[in-house]
Image (cartoon, rainbow, N blue to C red; front, side, top):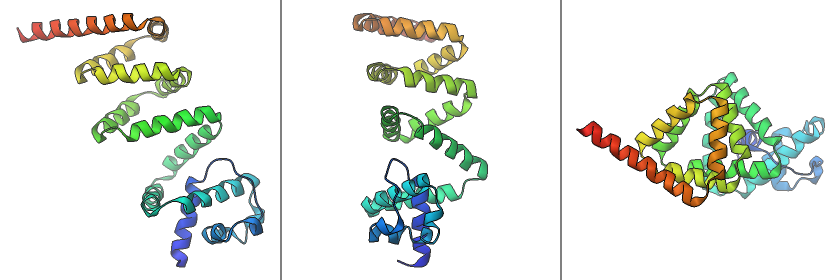
Length: 219
């Protein structure tokens, strides 16, 4: 591997390295890890224990990737290099918050991220735009709600959202944004305490109201 390629790989490892690993002396690394992390050899002992943990773990992840995964990682690294300092700091702050989560919370975050990546591109764009329009306070409340929801509640919320038309979704967004914090909390509690039959009846009433509005608008 040429020197420039080694430098690029080392940069990639430093970017996506995360997760627990035992801190190691340079001599304890495998030959493959040493090859990937060669640019850090001279100053390895001067790195913090946490930094060595992340780098050694990142090297393991890189070595486990196939060619397609490495290509995707290179693309992500290139996008990272194109960010301005403020954008990089925002990403680092989010990564630090992620590391402070419990293992169970981290797993839920990974699952939600995978679900997002499986959405159609247009839906991903809509969600990004909705998030960007939110104030910092609204984003903080959204994160808190997601952390406090049970897996069953999240699944029901996804199913209800998927059944809605684009117009219903937009009205739901508008209503939610205009509600006070107290009204939102009461709404969440009412929905959480509903039986499946009550939820079904609620969906039917909403559909009937929508059909009535459509007929009135058409007339």
